[in-house]
Image (cartoon, rainbow, N blue to C red):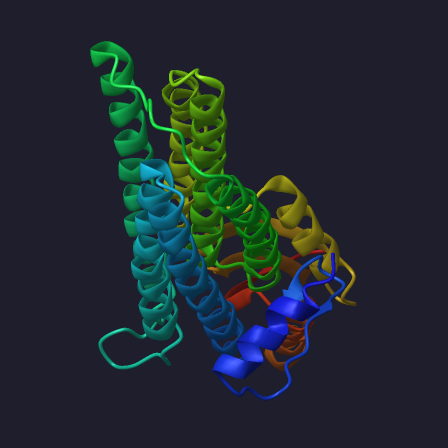
Length: 323
């Protein structure tokens, strides 16, 4: 998918150096810390600019077209700016270098930002659902006749927010950012709320005011599911969850490819924010000198760090084998 137009907006908002991402042998995407932060900030600025444009446009459309649903949708878009600011703060802090108080780095703080965003997303969904159920229960439907401008604004909002979802989601995967992925789903929730507004506006023009709250109930369910998935992904990255079996197998294959490694006696992995820590015990010829077995361990260490950019630290212990 071509996101050139969105990138033009981002470059207008902030000037960044060129960054490069490439898929490496280990199945991961190489992004250094500096480019990780630049990418996240650039995408966030794109989000803020487009949310401001949409919120102003939808507000004017709601006022001139006599559509309360569109005015509410404009407020929703404006509130998304707050969510994106949380992303920027989380990414900025998590990108800090290790220090004496945090020798293992700050990567987990980005997961905290993702948890906050998941909570905001869940609250947004519940708010939409509660308002919809209240309208159905009290039969408080929209009986006014919104203008055609409100319909046009809703359609434009759906298209732009859906593009913003895919744009943000793409770069969230490139840099493996939980907070940015949460912001992507916030864009999707805004697109879904605009669909509810579109259905409500169309229903009101056709004389079926109940269509908007019914659509909003369904939208609420989708938003809550997305919020739950984001929350669990962030929590898993904060509780030392192990990597999946595919990653573990690739780590083993990489180590076993090094001359002098006879077996992998133990391999433990843990996800630390968007990084991975590895503890490995390898078996090597016990008749070799300490310097020789140390060289084997160094070769394993260097090979894994080269082929698995997400591995921030690896500890290797050598067990002797007797032939």
